[in-house]
Amino acid sequence: MGQQFGTDEAVSEAIEKYSDMVRRICFLYLKDYSDVEDVFQEVFLKFFLCRASFENADHEKAWLCRVAFNKCKDLCKSFWRKKVVSIEEMDIPFESPGEGELIKEVMRLPPDQKQIIYLHYYEGRTVPEIAGIMGKNTNTVYTMLRRARESLKRRLGEGF
Image 1 (cartoon, helix red, strand yellow):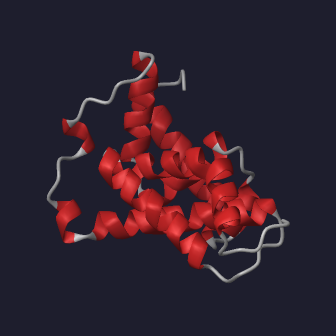
Image 2 (cartoon, helix red, strand yellow; image 1 turned 90 degrees about the vertical axis):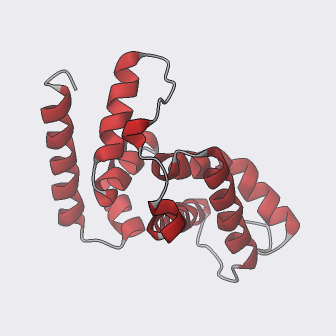
Image 3 (cartoon, one colour; image 1 turned 90 degrees about the horizontal axis):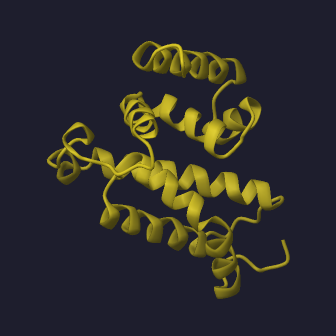
């Protein structure tokens, strides 16, 4: 990682590499474009202010995932956020009806299971990597992933 953290170049490079990932994480939780953009900016502001040095690009990416999850959780806990419309009342456009049903069921999972599903299936992370990102025991993550899969199978049928 050749860039000095906290510089315009480092932030620009990080935004270029990780903006899609951070937005997907934010959408997974927030489902509102303006909230997603607010948290997106907060994540990269924190990156700009961060004085830590990362071991490598994967460590940097995991740090950004963790910050994005935490910022989304913080917003979801806020008083204002608790007064907005739930996902069940919203129409979310998807390419296929099956995809929409899957995403809606993933959104209904508990937050930790939702994170694990996202990191495993959308980011291609292994269970040990997810455990490191989430600060949980590897066996705990395996159990949570199994429970999330079982829950989705029950709700969507065996075709999942």
